Length: 56
Length: 550
Ligand code: HEM
Ligand code: HEM
Image (cartoon, rainbow over all chains, first blue to last red; front, side):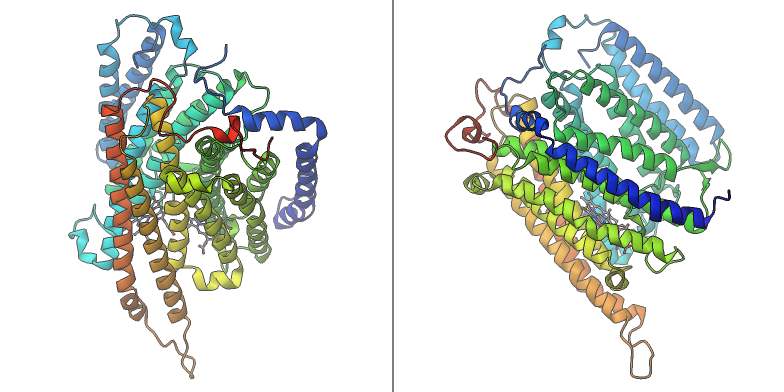
């Protein structure tokens, strides 16, 4: 198969589109997955902990 | 450096010796070429660092207590280097601005002509100032949010000094006329190869530190920093694929040709904006904003959604720099569409930041540092709106080649990049030097107003001149000839160029004030005993005020 302008066209117009749509669905699912809620809430507030040393 | 173990000192010396030998080789092979000068610079730079290592080579081993604190020494050096490049790069910017108003300010010498100092300005501010700020803050954020010390002690130094060697070679090269003629990637092949090595070390260090984290979840700021590191590596390598004339010659030719070359360059150029000037600084925003406001980010989920939106949309937007060119129309349309879609995650980030402050406006009023961060979020929203608008082809036909683009650039660069950096630094500096506060909060206030007024003058001057320029170039007489010559439009720019130089001067003075304030903080402010009085009280988290997360 020749790798020419038509190939690029198909790649971006068909597969590129599909890949981006699937990817966005994946991201939304990950973000709203119920069991992720706890880690996100924790991450959001945990940065304020005051002692300025690494945990061992 | 004092904390380096004997093994690390030995390894550092070996690296520096190899570099010195490379420097000699470059100087010998390039003796009839500017590359020879660069060889000499590499030799002296690594020699000076080696001298520094050797003076404490037989010093005593650091004890194990170092593992119970974060490794902040490289960050301190990074802060100093950031401020140096800020003043240098902005000084050159003011000079370039003054040359546009008064061309004789090039003093009729080659090295100071506009074509050479312009890349010195862009590289100085983007890579010197922005890059050092990103590296320094990334070391701070990744340690604090992972609750882990940097993975080792040598590679942070390698990254910082190696990176600054790159900046030095790049900027000094432009003054000698060395350039690849690719915007934001002007540095020649040997500097590019060196940056790849440094960047891989940076990536490995960052990932190793993340791997040592004690938190189960990687805080979102680190995602942005990681995207910045990873994508910049990819962009840099692809855009800089080139074949040098010979190993002793600074000149190289790119492997790309024609319109592909243009597309690769602007795929690089736009993603440099996206991942250097945006993603990394959003990392700063997502850490220093909540810390300074003492409020958790408004919506953590929104920050995740906008992260993936920004990383995946930006990749396709580069072709908006090539509207009305030989690039196939569908590629232009693709870039235009993605640029407009980009507004959504961009405003989600800006909105997320501003909503975090909602309910803490009294702090914004009292604390100039927090105001820097708020202004940055505001200008981020402004410049992304403007960018999405300019990416629409008919709008671009007016804005392209005019000062409107330059106005857009500096709304982003001064209003967003520089302000978020200074806001972060005023939070970071007392924290890593363990000072109870900044030397002078009045000077922070002065800096804030210099920065805001300077930015506004700059941006409004360029908006005006850009639109006038664009309209003059397309004004036709009834018999279809152009009404204005190019020189007519140039004369119309004169007052705006003076105004821009003045606005830029205010901004530069602000950066000098900041450097002085930070210097005095380190030199004179006593070490903090308990809670720092400069930081706002933590009522948002531990006190009565509720926040969205609770
Ligand atoms: C002291 C403040 C500054 C002044 C006076 C200034 C001035 C200038 C001037 C005169 C130009 C050339 C415009 C032209 O060719 O028509 C320029 C370009 C540029 N500057 Fe600045 N600058 C300043 C700060 C900054 C900062 C802090 C950044 C980045 C963080 C920055 C990034 C850029 C970029 C990316 C360009 C290239 C724009 C383009 O190609 O469209 N500048 N600046
Ligand atoms: C949604 C976000 C953005 C979009 C869609 C966008 C779009 C654009 C467009 C259409 C141009 C003009 C291209 C031309 O006519 O040649 C441009 C130029 C530029 N923008 Fe943005 N922009 C965005 C955000 C930003 C931000 C936040 C910065 C940060 C500093 C920035 C920095 C630049 C620079 C440096 C240039 C000049 C490139 C050159 O040298 O020609 N942009 N942008």
